Length: 489
Ligand SMILES: [Zn+2]
Image (cartoon, rainbow, N blue to C red; front, side, top):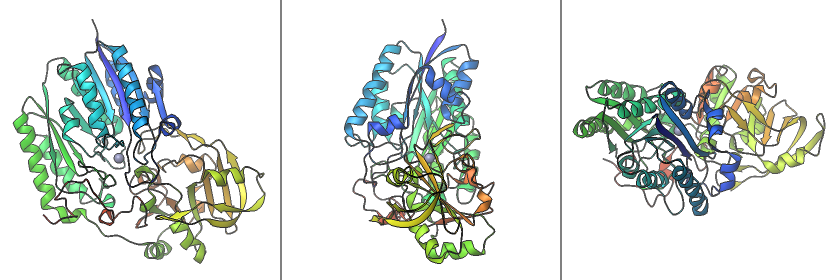
């Protein structure tokens, strides 16, 4: 009989500093699918589930897609939401039994009110249901804050190696191949977690550049050792006040726990030794705009304090306000502002009117009124087929309005929070990047995959907000100590 392998994903990056909680509605408006719908959505996608599907379909196994739920990164998940998701997941799992293996796709930085280690909790529940002998293998985001419970509840976890995460499909394939080899008896999966006493500043997490480039090179060398079958570095997600917030390493070996642990420790020592390189320097708004004026256009301005992919509100106007004062640079900006969309929706394209933007800068509300012309209204749906951060194909921005200012800058207003991972967000409206001096993208590294091909200059701007680059400005109550750069090592 064919072996039956389940697929399940519960995926959220939770920013515990964001004031708004994440609820079931956020998952329903995001991605919430079961059975064959999962295969339909992800078979061709540059997403870990797509990679898992590709491998499992080639093997003589029966694929059993159960549930995949994901919400845009945001605040802590409410208890009711998590219980509801967990109940649904466990029911699907129960109905699918017996299984010979389970592929899992947690993010690794999910936080719920009652279970701060949400991913550790649901993985442990799944382990309890399946028993110790059924392999559980899967993927993690490179920004996972990994707990011992996540690792003890699974047989092997593989995290993305690239930031922007353009290798998600590859990692899904890697994890599914580990599952297949384990089931065939070719290897016996064992893994070890080594937590590093350090948190890496977000703008230092671009894997193509130093200091990450050398780190991943060293990791690649260590992974060549006989017996090591997979080696992952989780750079970590600093915006979660939880015990497991930090950088970590997972080493998977063929039945050699000692080798897994020792290899992880070697890599940990390397990171600790080079810790000062992971702190970085920050450039504020005025200095960034001065730099942008001198740079080849269009310049990508990365709004680090309002990084939607890190759970921020998506309505910050810190950079726009400065640009509007000077009126020297023509800009593109996308804002999450459902009320402004409703206001724009009362007009026809070509109409000129004054619109009030909800606006914020850091934790200050900054409503901002501006004269605009309506360019377009739409349902805000577009597709991305290229390998881009997040690996998603279908994007939904909700009702969307595009307006222009008197100077020709463009503001896109959306009804859902959408991170800027795809150039199609502009192109599907016939907005060309080349018409601007600067493009403001609410992210740090993730938007680079989409925008580097059209922006000759990229500036990471140190703006305030719940994703501000300098993590030492937040008050933590639950993180481990010591943790560099909060404490000296
Ligand atoms: Zn990530």
